[in-house]
Figure (cartoon, rainbow, N blue to C red):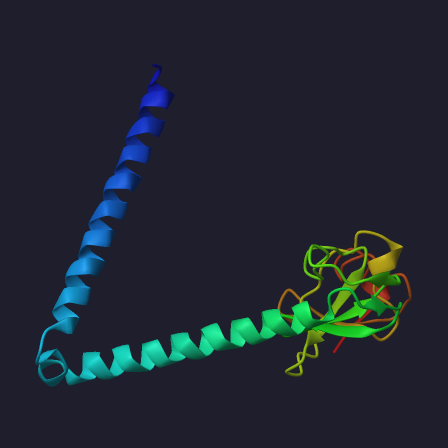
Length: 170
């Protein structure tokens, strides 16, 4: 075994040991939190724990609702230009197709172009287009290097740094 293999083995062993310690710490903490009088002895910790559990439950519920919303539409045909929402983000359909569970908008840029979120995200982060199908068009707005831009041309596949004439800073 060479030195690099030995280092890799030791690092792997170290991670495994840390995982066991973390699991043990969590179990001990869960036990302490379950003891009678914990909430009275540590009211601030108990309140934060209760709030975190409520937040966790709300997040789990939201995630399930979003998944269910997407799953309700699987098998439906969509046309180019249709707007769909996936995990709170608005996408425009680039090609007509039938929605499939394994063709999620965040993973198939040939079918969808991100437009922002349903909560009013006006300047989604600039993402390099993979071709003409997801290029930026006149009026598309993006956030790039902490600044906001609007595309001045159709078929814009360049960043504001690469082709400044294609973008107007807002």
